[in-house]
Image (cartoon, rainbow, N blue to C red; front, side):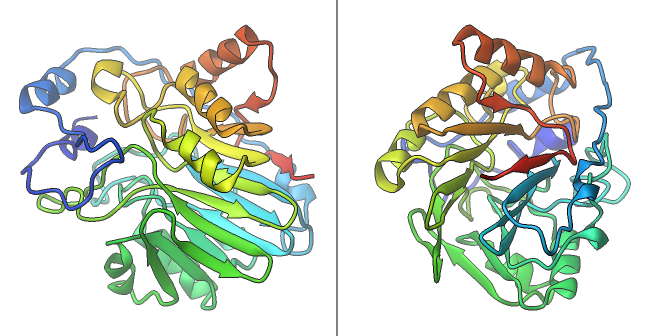
Length: 319
């Protein structure tokens, strides 16, 4: 917890990028110390992985999505194979022996993935941009296209990765019947001591001929999702974070809770939504299973059933 917390503060410098509301997400050292020394007894549970994905031919089958863990989804749609925020390493950390460790293994190993056409990265935090995983994916898929936020291209280039394109908000990549757009969310970036907000952060909106899919990356609640709907339309499917929010007085600006996630779904006008960013790493103080429990209650309270937290490895049929 302390290692993850340190990335919120150490050595503040001038921020090149900011959120659409113009407000930086910065916590004082006092706030950081209060959170990191708070004695919270978090209940750790281990969610079960599903083997349903093994019933698919990942290469030949089409129109499916699989939550691999955290913010990593394998999406196959209209012949395109997309991998979001691929993190397959044991720790979300720059170090091998310290930092947040996986509670569950990836539902699909990196060696079992099909051929990948596109890799998207939402921002440069270690639980979303894992250079070891990206390097291995490139080695296995030398023709894959890597789409990253502005400022992060050099991180991948240093690992020998090619075919990298970096984008500001509302820009993106077009190919035939697919348009991929980088969209604003409320968050921040940092990997070291002196690079806070020197690269951008965001979500990815995949617009196909028949419908769209949205991956929110990592975000606090903001009006960005209403603007995304206004500019790009409503997605049929949305992948939205539901975890890493406690204590909310510290985390709310940059991490939504399950109730906020439901509001994001409503702002987007998404037909179906799926929770991510929970139960893979212990990053914050909530109990492991609490995000799903709160999500289920929030959906029940508005008499809807179109937002679920799938099991890792289960198959989402993209009709």
